Length: 271
Ligand SMILES: [Mn+2]
Image (cartoon, rainbow, N blue to C red; front, top):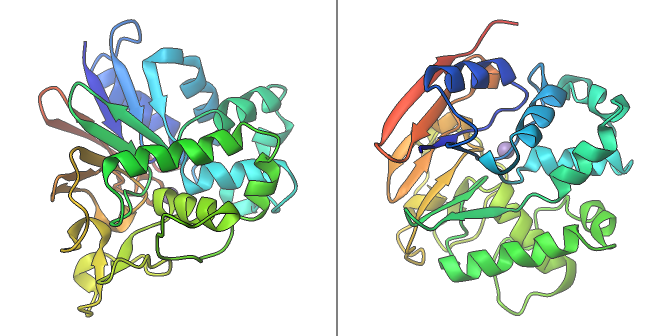
């Protein structure tokens, strides 16, 4: 039995299948952990949802910003953008089934054997692992309640950008969603930055720091595996592993086997 982690798929199903073939992935024995953003921009978002859902317990996937946006579009909160190439999902015969399945996915997953947590963007520097797990559960339970459309309608803002345990209602949920699915840089005081997507080496500021390099962040008892930040082109260090290496932007897809620490990469296929 082996456990493989893969970064953002974003509809690049063919590259994922090639990686799985390369390691002779066996859905009866092996596990595939995906860092979220299954959909958007790549050519096969619908097929990716179908494939990951069909893996059942052999796959663990979490919600990314594009997955939440897809759910928002399904409710008419936002319009489908042509460049996302997600329109076929909404007219597919199994549309409702796929979207309901997606809404049931978590924001965070824990691999207890290896003390790993997986989230789409990372862990807020103001959280320890226990707070992160509790915060994820809070939003997951709203997504499964009759308030889920209200939640998605009100998630598109950048504030509050600082955690405070007394935050309540939509402000609290929005901070949690932004930290788990959109964060890249933080300010040195721990405030989330929601604008900058550059690679860290292009930043000339003492104030903007990748969330995992913040000196005064709370220490984490688990290693964090995340995706979302394609400009990083992977990272291992600071007790984190970043796996989005921009397959959807023509770069490559990265798979990490947690059992032996080996990496496998697949160049993007020209569409
Ligand atoms: Mn993302």
